[in-house]
Image (cartoon, rainbow, N blue to C red; front, side):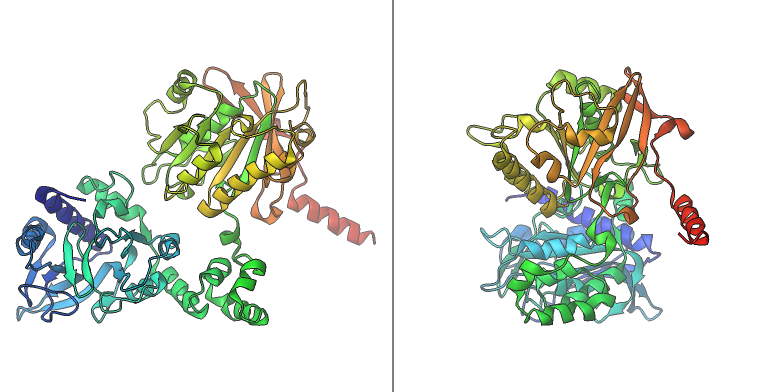
Length: 550
């Protein structure tokens, strides 16, 4: 990939500005340093021992120094490294390290080492940014790793607390490069080849580094707790760098001893553990929600009801909500009365609209998103290219780094085979569940009822779904939508999630607003039908029964 020298200058300036924003956010101000090592190992430099100190207002001058020594990539040159630790200038003119608002590492694939996708996955699950280095034709030659910290980190040798830990979690053996910070866009000649990270902005959501205000915002939104990284590194080491153990056991250090006892009782056979091992023990790591109490991540939910109940409008509205970037302090919207978990909605939301064409989609969008804020919503139809099936296209979509929500509307448009064929429907669910689990996606399938079905309650919906019994058995949650005159009654027809995770148990009554395509939840007792007893009411009944000796 070729990039003009002007673009590289802008890239370096942006990178330095973003790092200063991270430092300033945790109260650090002073100087950072550009330098070349005094030795020729592991970096080969025409001019060793270069040093250039600069403050937050000197980023343009610092970028100019980087480009001057780099000589547009022509060898021999000197590719300046960055010391991201903030220093304070003392009275005698020396510089004293005081801390950093970021943690970082360079993890390169050397020799026959291969960068595995799971390395980046482990880091990104912690909120750490990780993006591949290139070496020649190899575009997966290592990882550039950066974490934006919620608190200032204290110096530890050439780096700060947390740097060694993220290097360990990446699990590529390149110790000599680990504490070094390499600029994006700049090629670095090393004893192991010529490495280059192509684009610093690619580590962040699109257009989030375009100006100073945007950089401050992304710094605020991308911060991590370093203690979580330390805990994860401890668990990664304790689980002997077996990704299968780490993935299923999680990052709670308190569980390590019991988890390793379980592994030892399986004769320390990783393949056997993979087949029998438990899921993570932390409840929040097992089940997360896009819509708390209704729509879980990593699972399939069915949204079902008779024709004309507004299922597609509900699905479209949820996608708009989830694909909007909200301002700091802005209240999250509600969907069916539940507050959307906007922190779980990062990435591209995919809506397969099999029945509604562009005119309908655009008309609904004008109502749900009049200001065009849903920038992360991608619509798909039913044509995926010559000979490409829906299930094949689903595999393509796995390339998208994050897909919080996927809507398939309706099932029959994307199912290959008969809805009554349990084999065909099972294959359909196999592929969708695989996508949901691997990407942590909340997949919602919009599905129809049998002809002439007239349910009086959402709970009746499971007996009236069209097609194979597989449509009832496979989803974790089924949300039923029932018409009741001018109202809609919505509730969970099926729910395979433990009640302690706050699942909605009552049937809710909504007034239908056909002009705005909105469902307005009725207030108070009018908004609840067939409500279950509250925990307090159940406890009171239990106490009364105990007094009477029952």
